Each structure stands twice: as C-alpha cells, then as structure tokens.
Amino acid sequence: MSDLENSNNPNIENKVTIQKWEKIAKHRCVSSFDILKLGNTIQKKGIRPKDALHIACAIVSNCKFFITTDKGLTNKIIDNIRILNPIDFVREMDDHNEN
Image (cartoon, rainbow, N blue to C red):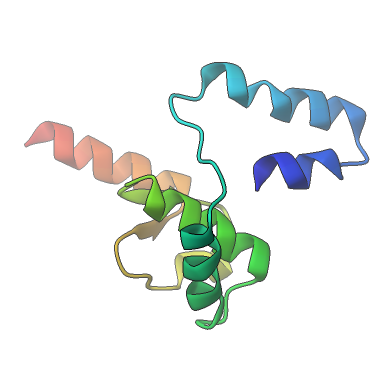
C-alpha cells in the first residue's frame, strides 16, 4: 500500500525520503486476498479504503499497534489492533517499560 501511494507522490523529495523506509523496515507485508478481504471489512467501519488496507496489513503482520496522526483513525476501534497517535504510543511504551 505504501509503495502504491508513494508511486503517485508528486513531490520527488518526499517520494525519495519515503522510499528509504524499505532499508530500515524489519518486515514487508505482501498483498494478498486475505488483506483485501480484511480491508473491505475494516472499510465498512467508516474508514477510507487506503487506510483500511494499511490497517489490514498491520493486522495480518501481527502488529499490536497502528500508529497514525490521523485523528479520525485514532477514534476507531478495530479488532486485533490498537490505533494510537505517536505521542500516546510513546507514553504507553514508557509506562510499559517502567513496570
């Protein structure tokens, strides 16, 4: 999903910067029928199609968290994953590490 979105990015500088994620990513999620099916289910909860596919990829990849600055998404509840903004994620990790 990220590759598709970035291929349509008109800003070359941003496009190149975003491509660098592949060099540091520990996991790459390959599209599948299961992801498309889950994405369609997530989309029915009022989530835009591209966002739904991003979340579906995270779930299929067994991520515990989906981190976003999209306030509309942080208010959504999706089974099998927690959607948090970066600040709340860092706070939660700090709390977790203190215990």
